[in-house]
Each structure stands twice: as structure tokens, then as C-alpha cells.
Image (cartoon, rainbow, N blue to C red):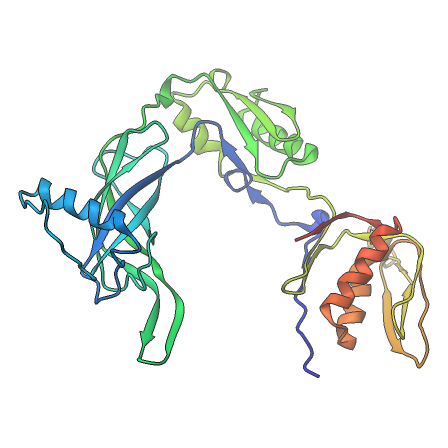
Length: 364
């Protein structure tokens, strides 16, 4: 039997986590992008476009486009197979200026078989307010390939979707006077009181006065006037590269579809007995006290020593896990034995249901 590979990722303990830049931990209030969407046509396909009978809207938009270009097709019947109707999406980044370029994604909405080699005709991109902020046009880079014969067809990837790098030009700017604001909020991507407090402390220490105040676990308010700097842009540029040591909650995340288990190094379990099939789990903790050399002015430290083993017995195994056992030790022992990922996930679910798992348990 082929053993499934279990991906076990041990996140670094917060006590030993590397400092992270503030710009990688927070979002600055007001500094955000905007989603754009448009409806257009892709031409130049090699017979892989929409079937007009199944996608009549393609014929309608094609006729409207030709009439705007001075070609009258009223009452005419045409059945092009090299045209496909598509949705065009993009994200307008913050502080984007007129004339700038942004990437766009093109996705077929009809029964087109492939957009490979097609060209997107000039397509306006609208924002949520209905205004046109960019115009897209260019050659599509499809994300897959399709080949078809008389009795068989093979598809690799997704040929009905693609991208156009720098395929849209910004035509309208989002009005936002960044220089006029007097305060800004820093929104943490992962709300945590300890991390927010550390961000507050680092910013105040950088400016030598109280300019930042933590309002809740996910927000740090920054008073720009108290920084005594020329502009808000200079303030953000000064503080976004400050290093902060983040704090994370103990989490165990399992994905039943792929058999993936992700956990933090600070996940712990209480004393509990586990029986699963004919597997026996044994976990022993034997910490070692290390004394410094005489006259070395060192400190006494306790070095953890853990031993985890799993044995396969003829009968049903029953294992007792002692207080404070690292969950990673249990999972490592099961993984070394080649336990199927779904069986391991069932064991973790049972430990959590028993109230012995001291971590946030997330099943995807």
C-alpha cells in the first residue's frame, strides 16, 4: 500500500520568532486597492471561441462593436468561431496615477474551449461606483492548453482563463488627499493584543513620545500631528520598516481533502489516554537541568528532552499522554510509522473533543 505523505509544518514558537516589519503585519487605513470589472470580447481564436447558438450575447456585443466602428451588420447572419465573450477583472492599487499600467485577468463566460492566442479588444473597467477607471487591451497569456481529435480531447490546466500583464491603462485616479489626514489607524492582519501592544511600544520608542495608542486587539491609532514630521507619507515611510516580534495563538489546522496538518510549536495537550486501532503511543518528558561553569556568570537553564514512540501491537493499543506533552511529538511519531493522514486527523479530533487539546482547532 502506498503511504500518503503528510505535510507537517511546525510554526516557530513566538518566543523564538524572528522580528517582522510593521508593513508585513498591518494594513494602513485608507491605503487600499479597488476592484475593477469589465465585459469584453476576445478575438483571433483558432476556432475555439463561443458557439453563437449557446452564447447569443457574444453575437450581440460583436454587432454593437462593429457598428461603432462603422460596419453595419443589421440583419446579417454571421457565425464566427474565433470570438469569445469574457469578463475582465483587475485590482486598482492605491495611489495609482493616470497613465499607469495594471495587470488584468480574462475569463470566458460562454462555451469557448480555449482563449490561447486570443486578443482582448478595448474593454472599459468599471469600479463599484460605475465609473470607468481603466481600459484593458492586449494579447492573452492562457493558463493551459487543449488538444482535440475526432474521438478524444485532452485538456491541461485551464485554457479558458488567462492574464494580460500590464494589460490595462489607468484612466481615472481615486481621489484621496493623503496629506490632509491628521490620524491613521494600523489594522493588524492577525488581531492580537500582545502584538498590538508591541507595535505601540516600538512606534512610541522610535519617535520618543506617545504618538501611537492601542485601541483594541486589531487596531493601533497613530496621531500624525504629534510625530512633528512634514507629511503623513514621511511618517509611514519611517515606521513601516520597524521590526516587531509578533505573537500568535496556538492553532491546529487540518485539511481533510489533502491530508495536511499545520500546527504551532506552542500547541500542548493535557493528560489523556488515546486508543486508535492497534497503535500504541508513548510520550515521555525528561527535561535536563544545565548548570553554568564556575565563575562564568551564566544562568541555569532547563533543556527539554522528549521521547515519543509508536508501536504496533496485535490488539487495540491504549496510550497515556502526560501533562504538557507537545502535540508535535505525537504527530511526529504517528507520521514516522506511516499512519494515514485521515487516521491522524481523527486522532486529533478525538483529543480536541476530549478537551485535552489546548489550541484553536480548525478543520478545512
